[in-house]
Length: 132
Image (cartoon, rainbow, N blue to C red; front, side, top):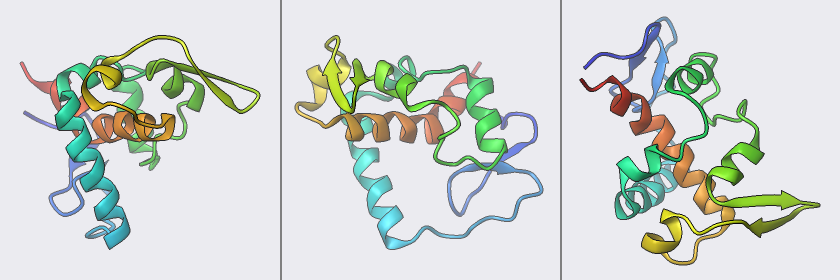
């Protein structure tokens, strides 16, 4: 399995980075705790099922990461909200449909759902798409 064109998987930080971009190094303790929390949630819910919810193609995710957008904020938040089964109107989230989150993870906030999807997009989605 190889990384998307122009990106390589960093062995130290675990992100896809531009081939010429120096690694930011090991994550801070806060970032490490954040990653650990969403790694557990992602596996509890199911990586493959979450990959199916990612709002955007692998090319779009790869492009955002290649531009240095490690938080995937170039993809509008409303798209992540929608993928999680919500729409936000006047700052109030409204649930539109039940999703895999509801069946496998219980009560999670919309922010936790979005963070879980973004975690999967960063660490698994591109790898899943690269498999034969």
